Length: 122
Length: 122
DNA sequence: CCGTATCCAATCGGATACTG
DNA sequence: CAGTATCCGATTGGATACGG
Image 1 (spheres, chains in turn cyan, blue, orange, brown):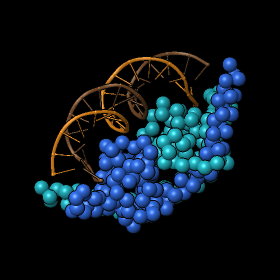
Image 2: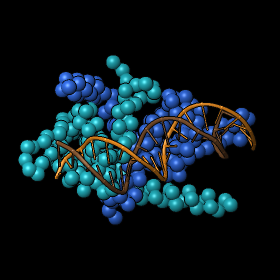
Image 3: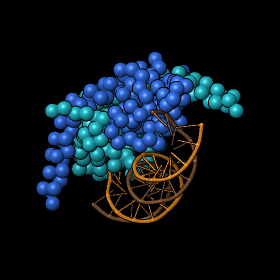
């Protein structure tokens, strides 16, 4: 069976959309080194709201990337962990992470250059 | 200099956001094999509107990923091509593409499983 | 602690129409 | 052909409040 992301109706398009979700990448990265609790993830990822974190986690569980384990304790404890499939994604996403860190300087420079030329054109 | 995508104000966050843009990935992929024209890209990527294509291309040029070359012909011809930086991103994004194609089946199965269990719970 | 529910502002993105 | 401009519906996501 073949998948073609260019096709609007191909499910891979949905997958790329998911990765495209800015939060998915960060959540997956945050779980590379082992399971974490709900609040831990939220703290690690600066700026995500509780609602969005909850939504994103749920859909990642649904897609088989994460497992959710609730312990019957007081106070309650819930841990999220990557599945094998999730780990696989994490590896891929790690390339993105590395790329962003390595090339951010070039991008910033390109932007400055672009904006300057544009301003000079007036 | 260090970058931390977890920090809300870190520019790498913006970079990941850009990659997160569903269209960026597809546009970059469409240019892997060489320069293409505006309409070509739009045709290859099923479902993108002219407006969004235009916007996305412009910001990719600004970020130094793409070059835009306009030829003084009638009818006009404009070609977009990856810069070295863009090629670099393309390689990284190719991993995503491959990942999506290879694991789409598993994701689909996980979803079906998840929805079934959820339905049975009622 | 770990969420869900609701409201609402802002952004996104499609459709359409119009220029160089 | 390669865009830009405008309108507008749909989606997103934050803030807040509340429940298990």
